[in-house]
Amino acid sequence: MGSERLKTPELSETDSPPPRRSALTNLWRIKKYLYPYRFRLALLWTMVLLNIIAGLAIPPLVGAAIDGPISDGDLRGLWVFAGIIAALGAADAILQLVRRYMQTTTAMAIEADIRAALYEHLQRLHTGFHDRWQTGQLLARVTSDLGMIRRFFAGGLVFAITSIGMTVIILGQLLFIEWRLALIVAASAVPLFLIGRKFFMGYLPAARSEQDQSGEVSSAAEESALGIRAIKALGRGPLMAARFEKEAAELRDRGVRKSLIASRSWSGYDAIATAAIGAVLTLGSVMVARGTLSVGDLTAFIMLQLALLWPIEASGWVMAHGNEAMTAADRVYEVFDTEPAIRDRPGAKAVDRGAIRGELVFEGVRFAYEDDSREILRGVDLRVQPGETVAVAGRTGSGKTTLVSLPSRLNDPTGGRILLDGTDIRDLRLANLRSVVTTAFEEATLFSMSVRENLALGRPDADEGDLLEALRVAQAEFVLDLPYGLDTRIGEQGLSLSGGQRQRLALARAVVVKPAVLVLDDPLSALDVHTEELVERALEHVLQDTTALVVVHRPSTVALADRVALLHEGRIAAFGRHSELMRTSPEYVDVLSAESEEVAA
Ligand SMILES: Nc1ncnc2c1ncn2[C@@H]1O[C@H](COP(=O)(O)OP(=O)(O)OP(=O)(O)O)[C@@H](O)[C@H]1O
Ligand SMILES: [Mg+2]
Image (tube, rainbow, N blue to C red; front, side, top):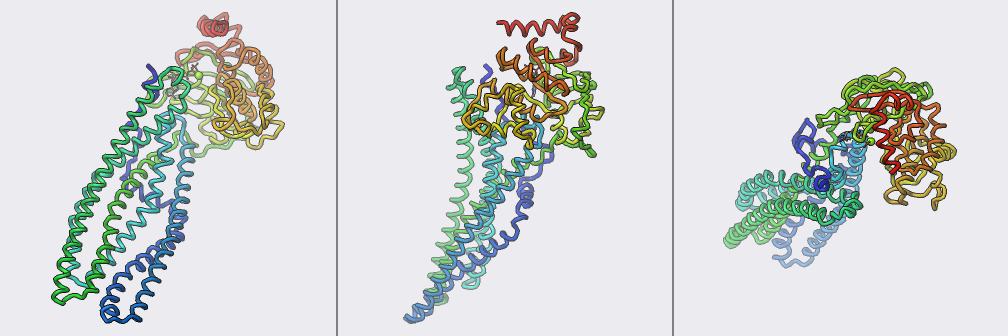
């Protein structure tokens, strides 16, 4: 059954682009996106520092209050201490509030910047990349991975620096109060370090594997949502549910594995820190009893040590976040580091739409899809004269769609070349080329926007007249009767249209561009015979002075074309007028009669 393998569920290792860098390097590369926010970040760090100082000034003050006013019974003096401590506490709280707010908004802004850059990059990558990557994996990168990076910069990194700063200051304070006790605290750092190192080595791969699996689950969910009709129609609901459950269970297992590693380390941390407090309390009490340490100093010491617990615990958390952010950065840079395979050649020329005559020539064009040994096109030679309409016929799977994806460079030939007015299309600017050569595909994709926006996608400056004209040609004037006319929202979040309606809108969208070369992949397949005839009659008018390459399945559509090319076994097996080919090419007769039987049936 096909449903078991809608798309291979494993993202293989080879999908990662070659220049692999360490996760840490990739996280470091994010700094490029922090740069615009440097002043805000500097202010943020200043506040963090003030926070630490305000927080750590309190324990020594408490100690001094115990040894001073409290043991002297000086109530007035105690009020002064209480006032200072309260003021420091309040300042600390306010500072924290402002800092948290700034921290969050800045991190969100940075995340939004990276997301926009990633999206833009995805747009530049060629269709082959999108074929190869599961949508869910890309979605996971654009959403949850970037979220992890943000949480690291907003939370983890701030915690890390705060922890280090606090630890250094506290250790200094402890040494100052009683160096022998401070040595006990310092000694506990050794086992903490060892646990930390072990954690680091186990957590990184565990986090990566969880994040990858999260992408798998998104893919499975997304596929089911898109394919819900097919799944229901085939009665494969339970099977798909089982498949999804399997992926979800795997995600749970990997999440548990990751959390176990974290909680094991954290409880180790806690145990060691608590043991150190116990030791200090015991030895400190002995010192107090002997009179070598004041009660106030011991109190301050313990308070500071308790304050140290927080950075110690936070460091576990920071490492977890840091780890996740590192793997997330890795995954995000897998996409960023993939160079667009189809891009402007150095010195690519701009094309002037007005100066294009529209001669399209295929010269020995070969094509194989990436990671596929089969050559779909094996030396296609075809010359379309300016203004001529050439139909491409061929059996299903013969490579017609593949062939017509080449002139607008959705794919580049693997051999041979394509010339537009004598210039290799790879020497023309891509952005330009696509407004000169416009393609409408059989599977019409409309976007969640108004009809007007959908129509003007290829030519944003088109006016009302252009749109209406294109709608007329495509026999798509039904949109004028929609609830809000041209402003009706369609697509996934809007009004649903029938297959034929969508196809006619997609055709109109291509016609609006008024390209020099119009490429249509079976533009009328979803239309009834009557509508098809109407569209054809209107199209004929448009095609009169436009070079066109039109994939056809039905003999009736062939009538649109001046000449027909028969694609067979990767080559143009026959080329000429329809009537001519009907006489001379049995293969052609075969292909078209097979189709007409379908129509007749
Ligand atoms: N994105 C892709 N990646 C890998 N192989 C592909 C891809 N698209 C198509 N193919 C393969 O290329 C071959 C030609 O497909 P193509 O879609 O060009 O045929 P077609 O002539 O348009 O068929 P149809 O008449 O059914 O539309 C098929 O064997 C198909 O499996
Ligand atoms: Mg096709």
